Length: 145
Length: 431
Image (tube, rainbow over all chains, first blue to last red; front, side, top):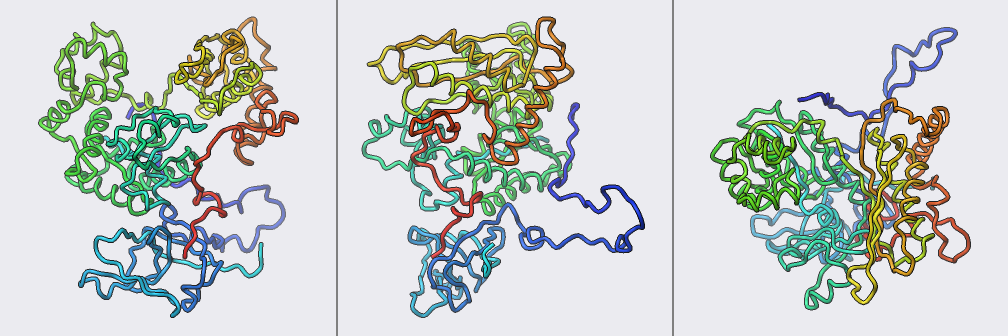
């Protein structure tokens, strides 16, 4: 492969800094128990390349506990199942609803709101419709940062 | 085996990720300052929209078609293509990102009989996770892999991944590929080869190697010939080596005074210097070109290009900007309305301990400049590009009071999309 050496790996992980710096005085008794700090990006975003974010507008999912102004994390790598909360592109806008696959064999699926005031959308094969991603987390901020 | 992953209609595909309604619709993306078409969807290509069509002619040429038009949004394209490369990194033994929309892959760790399936899976994964289509070419040489990726893009039967793994397939592919589309054959060589009767890649590959060597006396052409014949010949380090770096833009409107031009040229020069430093290289030649608007036949036309040689090869913003400004003064003629300018740096070599020219500044000065550039680069990386710029790079503010505006604000982008992957304020809204 010529003179270029190609190394592969993930270089984005931060280096453990506990061992850096000058050692003075007694060694820390915690040294043998080092464990990496909890990290939301690492532990909650399983597919960084496939993760996107969205802001909720309106109350069509309020009975699912998702309110106007909430922020959701969408993972396009997760295959939606029957009952998943999904983001779909429907009628020219992004919408978040329950995916109901009960009638898939009959040639249609349904997008169900979690609010009786909203209609259920029936999507038939051939409609201009796509499941854009699967909602995997909800973020609601109580104290603004 | 080598692979190449090619992002189909890259900029258009990026725009479509957050605009699923534009599937099947003609879409074009314009160059900086909304000058001309730089990317087209398949539908726009089928309509006959040509690359380079000036924006103002689009409506004239296609009055009855609805075309979705976007200003280029490199913030979005950079982020989304980065995601694609990140997936490629996780799927391949080794890779090399060749350009914003092409990535070479080194596939020696993967079993030959698994490769086709592997490629189809990679396409599916990128399509589903990032929402962008890619075409994959697989072959024993990089040049053949490029041709394979074109086949994968063109014919649906390949399922986005075409592998050239037999001599029969190789000859069929070469027969299909026009000589001017072969990777590494520039426009000039293509014209010469066509004049010699080589219409396809196969015509060229069938020539005798010694004849090619004697006729062209050019190592790169010989390498291309070998690669087409299945011999791995383009060294990996060749990929990373850019022979010249060019930064050029069409202006927003037209510029006739030299001070306005100087500010533009200073910014292009600074960008070239930054790119040189990014790849740890220095340049010896700084060239500047300047031209009027060729689409305005009612105006007087002028264009010129000149270059200057630096006493000491350099990647310093100050040295390159100064040289570019000097060249601009030489080629500038008053009385014309200019539309475009550009800075090209050439004679690029590694930034090793540089031979000091006897007549150039002393070594201490040189080291100081180098440290200054390093600090400026670091600040701009940390706090956003153009946090620190040269005074000569600053534009007059929109209200006309003082020079404080940066390049990014001096660019016209009337049809720029949002940045849902890099700005919280732009993330998608869910009804």
